[in-house]
Image 1 (tube, protein in one colour):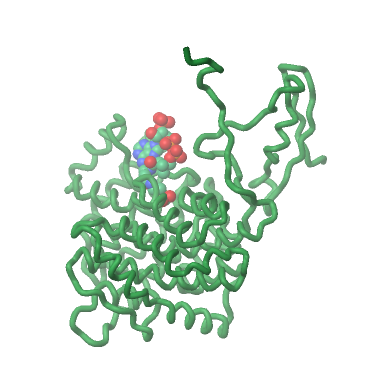
Image 2 (spheres, helix red, strand yellow):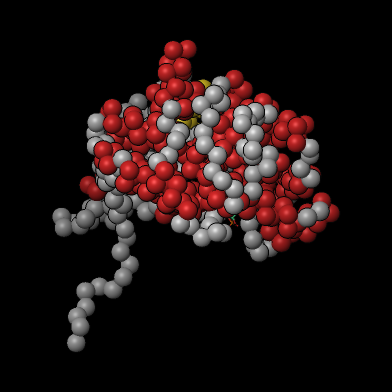
Length: 429
Ligand code: CMC
């Protein structure tokens, strides 16, 4: 069978044979290199055909071997490993290593990787002072975006993006410092003194320490909550070419340094349709307030007054596998923290929505943000911190995708085309 498609241009009657390229699964990832469409012309001076795809709903912007999603079947794998297996048995740092290196670390590699990340968690004292400049009520996500961008000025060598050693150092720094900046942003808004990292703790244990340590000398995270946060980070670590990752790649494609590229990715994540959705879910559940109010709320969604936050996904047209894991994780967390009463509203909302023709016909299922906020709230995180938590975990994926892009010879500066619909040439009087 030839690996091509034939297109007949009905405008001219010409036939064109265009090659098809494949990924790992020929039935899930076949694509026509879009540049070949340019050969389809009505006349010699015709620019040639482009694809028109707002929101890139059907455009593969890269080849990638990091994350695979089959949205119809609700499958998510990192480097081939099912998300359920990774969440069940591996730590966030192991998964970050997997995304970056393509393989899970062996014992020595993990020790070495963990040591390096642990020993880069401290931020420059001047960064702390930079953070002190924010208004008292600054949103922690705004603080994160700006502070990560500011790191660029502290590490000017990071501009040497073609040097693998320099690149690796910035990757370690970013993964190490994101929790510190995030926790400092929280402490600042809570009016608490910054709590410094503790190298004796795990990645998530240390983050909890920097968030919640009070006057005690040695903070001991609850092991169930420490592990739960680790699972949450594993689930959020990567999700192929989503809005923030595409932003990371787009900014990185101009060869900007990784700090400003991660800041841009954080900014993309901040929006309520992306990583800001978990914050909105919580506000929505609080607004509903009571299980009895759920049917009325669903009716208003169906009338188009607003969207059901935490529902629907561009890629998943089935239950988001991450939401399934989180629903179970919630019970483990509640066993320690006590039940978050919002869970009853969420479960009822899910039950009603999944039986309703509106949601069924549009294949709208709970996504990762539907249950994550309820767990974060039970663990004591203020709502405004939810997208920040997402950003900490997703930094691993952003950096893995950025690194992959830089060594991919097919990649060029991101520069889409447009279909111009404005005025034809005209002249001022
Ligand atoms: N509530 C009600 N209706 C919805 C929802 C929703 N949450 N999501 C989509 N629809 C409807 C939409 O109105 C449209 O209906 P119609 O065909 O009658 O016009 C149809 O479903 C298709 O929607 P779409 O906007 O074309 O779908 P999209 O792929 O462009 O949008 C989405 C995906 C995630 C932005 C959207 O589902 C949404 O706004 N969800 C709520 C926000 C949310 O939970 N975001 C988190 C996404 S997962 C984590 C992440 O990526 O950060």
